[in-house]
Length: 130
Image 1 (tube, rainbow, N blue to C red):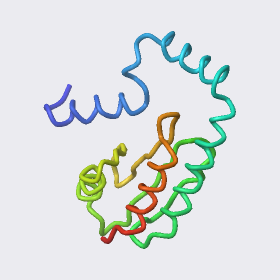
Image 2: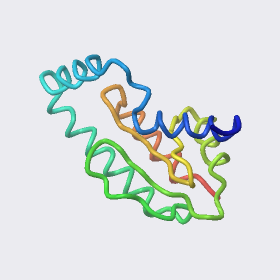
Image 3: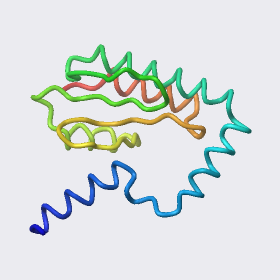
């Protein structure tokens, strides 16, 4: 029980942690397909994620980057950086990221994330100023 703002925040957190997935069979089928047909491609995704994590770690407006062990990069903005402004700046350049709250953000590389896209994201990140 709470006000609309509290409930909205609770729903967001639930979804961040996967609470919105009702039919896990679809997710299992996708994972099975990826392992059977794109296993070698996962290495590329992981390497791209590691590279993005390294770039983020060199930027003065990034406080921390969590160890990148898969295709997911989780990082925290420095306290002086507004999360919404950062998010909007990337979105305005066609780059989508996920906010996790408390100035933490998440980027994910995947099968449809091409080498050209990767080069573009690296260029945009290196050019950002905050």
